[in-house]
Length: 114
Image 1: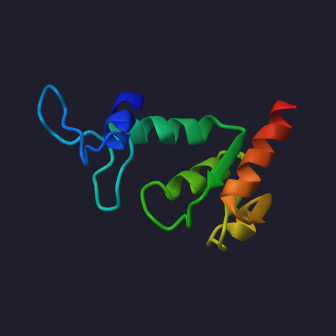
Image 2: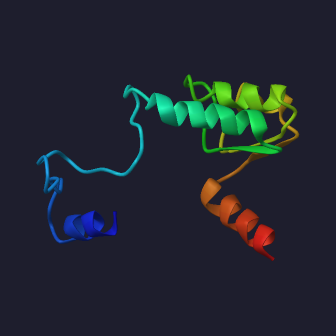
């Protein structure tokens, strides 16, 4: 990914793939794109087996990713929501923080590593 970012900083708008000439992007899914079913299955399995579930920077309204919160909750995980705005799951979470992710998340990571 660093190589592609360097190419963009050097002036390329959409660095083409050297193999297929397609546009390279990070491993993200844009709104309306289909999720990789294998990745989704692994996420469901992780939600079913986790002890703590963190929902960070999401309204928890877009499916199927939003269903992961319910899956973790039903499996007995402690659930936390960090989002600027309220979500439909706020009352179900053990911890809810409505604040800037850019401020709160680095502080949380620093505390966890201390």
